[in-house]
Amino acid sequence: MKTLSQLSLVVMIAGTAQAKELTLDKAIQATLDKNPVVQNARAEVERAAGQRLILRAVGLPDGVVGVAGGNQGGHRAGEDSNQPFGFAYGALVQPLFDARIPASYRRGNVELLIAEQRLNIAVAEQLHATRLAFYGALYNRSLAGLRNEQKGRLDQNASAIQDRYAAGLADRGALASAQIQTRELDPRVGVAQRGYDGAVLKLAETMGDSLDDKAELPEPRGQLTLARVDVDLDRETKRALAQRSDLQLARLLVKAADEDQRIIAAGYYPTLDATLGGEFIPVSGIRRQSEGSPRRSDDIISSEVRFGATYTWRVVDNGKVYGAVKRQRQVRESNELELRKLEADVPRSLKRIRNDLEAIATKHKELLTATAAAQQNATIMRENLAGGITSPLETRLIENSLLETKSALASLAFQQKVALAEWDRATGRYLQFSDDSTQNVH
Image (cartoon, rainbow, N blue to C red; front, top):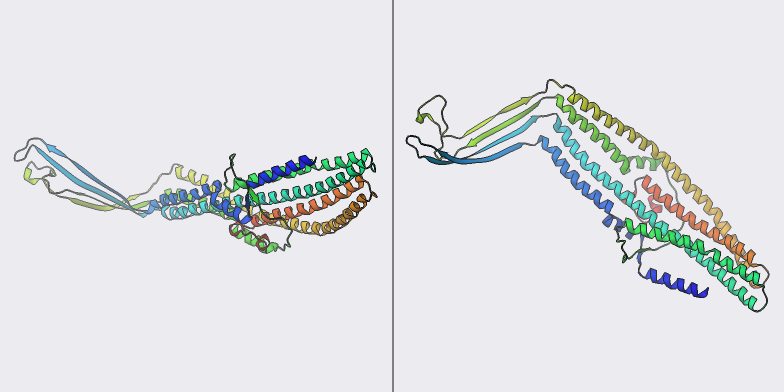
């Protein structure tokens, strides 16, 4: 058994030598820099900026410039048989009145804001996942440490009984019972270790680290401790309703649907455009043929400029615009319903998290007393076991009771950290995240 313990220790040391120590602040920064979901959301912001230019193009002038050239051939009195020629032409159309223009400009701005809020949501979700994975790694490592510590004590008890058995002071049943007690903790240590490995892998994934065979896995640094937490439910509810990214996104989707409806409804209204066009003909011998005159001298060599206005109004709709408006109105109303649901869920979620934090604080006070009593009983029992007063079974029960209370304290610390992370996400604080969660909830 000693050989196996030494081998396990060597493997653990070799494994952690390839890991890199990691603080929560560094994990958060790495997530912001390398997380693929966040990077994709940033790219969507750039796409939205291009879409905004497209929507704004409705109100900008539309210009066309062209050049034409050729060769004029044939036989005519007083002219060469072939005459090359060229001229330039251009046109400019500027909308003077179009009901789509104001809505299109607003829609373009909303498009960019929607992409930015989606980026905020992606950042918040990935930071939340990183934070939970970090806390999960610390929690499972703490459990593994507690159980290994307990296992070490039971190993010492088994060694002491083995010495007593060798001296003829203990029977074989007592030795077997002590060895079984030691082995009973192996599965629980394995569960904690697997939980730690899974949390570390999840942490590396959210940080955007490589997960190949040669990857250097992070090793979270620190420990979980309970903190005194005091929250103001009413104030934080108002803050969440005003600042949460998903609520802001939902409001923007409602606004975008309304602007889309206005753009579609613009088909009811007339449009008025100012037009400017012309041709430039250099002095090259090209002539415009005059209308109705047979004389060559009546042909004109000149450039020209034309300007005016065009007016368009759809009089008969046939349901094309009306149907599209009704369909878009349904989209806007659906978005409004979703927004109301999200807003109504905010106070319920915050109240639930606050109740969880209060329950954790109450359990913590009770467990502190129980842990102190269990620690005192375990100390007395170890002394009695060394003196042969108590049995290994009684020692195991006391040691297990101490392990359970310490594990419960670690579990409460983990639950509080998770609840604080949920509180920060529910109140929209992730975009100003800091390592000190107790400050975030004040």
